[in-house]
Image (cartoon, rainbow, N blue to C red; front, side, top):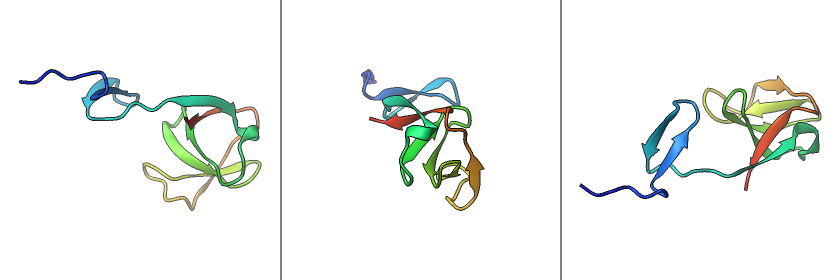
Length: 83
């Protein structure tokens, strides 16, 4: 049996457990209003990725989202962008 290194394990927020071979993603916190239209971001409340479509709307692009159904966000909502 081989030992796993820190780069081979990461924390998956929805399951609260470590999974081998998942890459840990670093995110910068930013307000929704500071994103550009078309920019991809992570919503910590739903634990899914979205793409900003307008000043108030974004579409989910992971999980059950196919990028077509809009969801409302406030300009002050804190989201994350991968760095």
